[in-house]
Length: 202
Image (cartoon, rainbow, N blue to C red; front, side):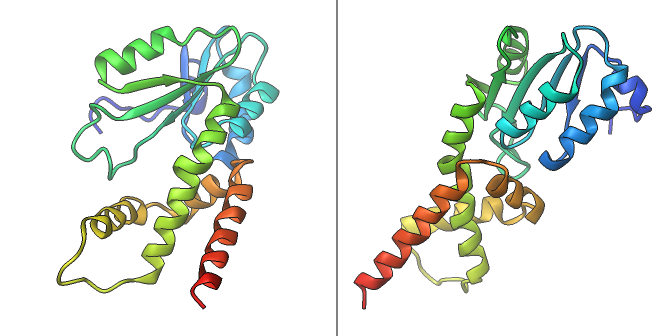
């Protein structure tokens, strides 16, 4: 990839800005690996789909004085296929960390819509915005519905939503569902509502 170089972990970790781009369940381990090599006051970001768990891991394993900024790009390869402009990203700074510089770069250079939040509010919001919609979309995908010769607008939108996440890995889907502490309760309510609706049709 142009402009990208593969370097040893020690060199990458010594940069003033370090981005942890691994699955949620591996963040704690990676933090332990990079911690000895971080520069004083380094800015460390993650890009996970949930925020409470990875930010807790960063707090637990990174040196004191490290500036921690959780980030969640609300797009993937499919939804950003036509460009990043207008896509959204959430920044969750640790107390005392000023996200203004990062927010400015994302907004002015990458043309992203930047939202500032705390980790708990983020995960509560994503339980419905992401975990629930991914769940519904996965169900629709797993039904393997045949192509329809004619459709409604609502069907087209539902199928479009399913197609957006159809290419996501099962690992990502499980991370969204399992590592968001608020997803399980909402998932239970969803299936309870589905069972109640099914009973009404008997």
